[in-house]
Image (cartoon, rainbow over all chains, first blue to last red; front, side):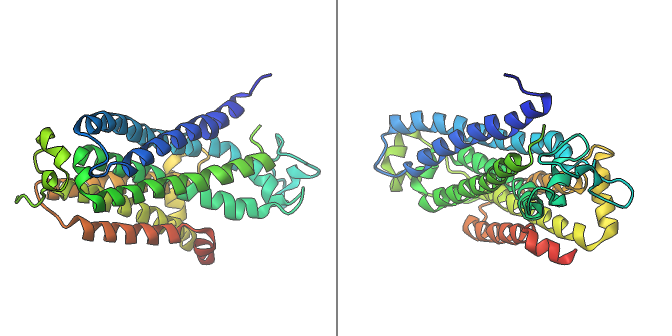
Length: 191
Length: 126
């Protein structure tokens, strides 16, 4: 039972950081949602805000770590052009049922050698690799707003709703990235 | 700066915390910066398809690292987010900016950026 270096990084990028992001998002959303007048005592606000600060900044840091590891460590392995030989851009993928040393995941998907797979790259990967970067921007902005306003958010329902919109936007961007990442890695794994 | 918030009157449980009023400028700054960052990422994603020169420019950001033009898009978008945040912070840090209006502007920028990075849209320019 072992993982290669590439598989380990794929697990760190998608599973470890993705799970942490999801946990931090859930905590942050629940904390913000219940931060309403009349629901929490003064002592409760103090206790809740401390937890919220930690949770939302963990979410922001994890969002940055996820997109940086994904773009700068995992993505080059996915994207490498290994298959071209002469005029045939997918010669190295001939007969492949999974990506190989001569057929990167991107080559494999675009070659359609094992079913109609090109849309996983042309739509799924192309969307995922871009939209996921909205997550750290939005999560960082939400974290700053929670830290800057602190308990004042209890008295400002509109602002609290705006922060929740940004938090949900960050989650949606990460969810698109995570879902397509999981599907693509299932069809064309980085080995 | 003028104090425009009455938090402890709306939520009496805040009175014991003795929270000083704060201007909305810094909050508005980060909201608009997030919208700008997403818009820049969307614009660069589409421009990468439109122009071979821009594609080469974006591709050069990682040398031979294998990331391709995504390197330039994400680095420049991050610089746009952090840079615009710093500039807007400097401009608005003591001001009571209309944060609702800024939120809607930031949301609009973010939506446009998100549309521009949707594959059927940017691939139409390829």
